Length: 604
Image (tube, rainbow, N blue to C red; front, side, top):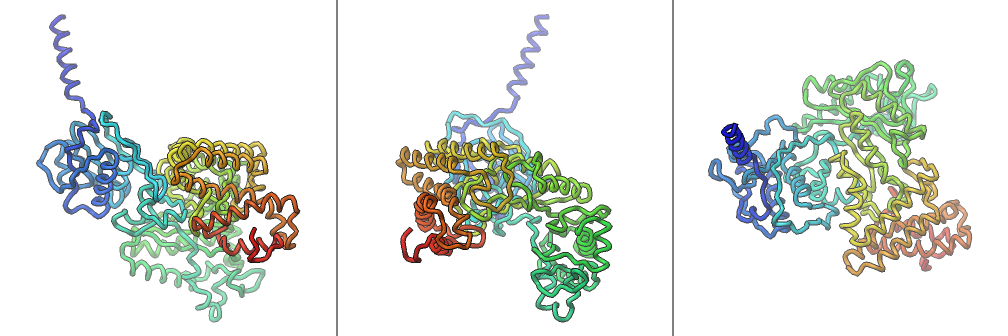
């Protein structure tokens, strides 16, 4: 028995010695970064990003090399190559998707590699975030904490497959700073190979305008643009296409095939209805749509027909179409072609309560539509409304719904999300934190929006972060207490933001400035405070926009004029160009002055 115990102890000891070990941060000082000589641009850039940010965290400047001795230790392998395959942490990425990633850390080696073109780059960013605490907050603020030299990372063998192939929070900041967008794993902002390029499945917009141009065909073939009430539609703004007309099908198909021939690498193309207009009511179209109980009947048959022709020549190309307004409800009997992508929209939903549980009629209908499309289409993308389009920079109570909505979409088969947000001009208010939360949740829908919000507020605004969180909570509590359900166009009152909520926000920012000396953080707070001033001035808008110049009640004018003054001053200081999607702050400044009975050059 004694000998058996000794044998078992020796076996346990040998197993313990053989168990993989993690890597202590201090050990990295004399390592190197290995990237293949034939690495693609995004893998080489991933190695540079790792090198740069590791140095900021540790002061270790690791050389980047292209080869090492077979089986040797103390290397960080970045991307696919012969060296990583021959290493003690080697693996093959042959069956990885374009953004799949794997991280292995054990016994004196680290390997980060993924599918091409973006997997390795996203793997590096995941490593930096998850194991070194790096946070990519805004284009000019990357938080890189000092690494604890005693910290041990691993052992780790981790694989990640992002649940969505298309992630686009459409804030202008991401478009203007594509490296920042790539760091947040937004895969739709740039064709730059160094940053991994754009996903093969982008957002699908209104394509019939260009595929069957009004100017080219309206005079010679007015029947192409549909009928309404027994008459041919004669105004472009009212026109959609007659989708049962065989000549229209031939024209659109030719345009699509010509575009694909001119762009051999293209893997998707849009065949999608115009914005606005009336669906065709000719006898042929009406017969199909009545049978299918939706305007999507003729649309999906048409898109399927184009997809069938495309597939014969380009079998790997997807054809995308919007399910929007009259076509949002899925057809009753038709299934989508396997190569068709349907992009549904949350156009009419409430943005202030979770779609999954909302009683708002349009949200209830959306749930039915999403479930219906899921039964007849293998690939669904979503056009999601993520801001107030009447007052771009005003905080609204749509932050708590972000996590449950994104999770609900993913659970119901949505493969990609375009979150339409502040896309015209730089943004202010709380849009920086919304961009951060949206991007991180699109990458990982299991993340916590509360945690993401707190880490952003505390890292970006320092000790003032909890004060801003107090205002955010009060704004959301007020909306929930009042049972607010509202869409994506409104003023403060539509979102339950009354004078008491505004007062909490103003007090929070006053206190924030009082306790903050750092000029960089004070500047961030100023830019964020633009939003609370917009909420405060919103009280005057029902009168200012009533068409009766100078009829704002004196007490409301007295309360709101200081906030108009401060709003426009700060917008000028921080280059905020747009009041809302269409109107600029410059034009609104003079327009609103007239409504207050002021001269153009008269100060607020």
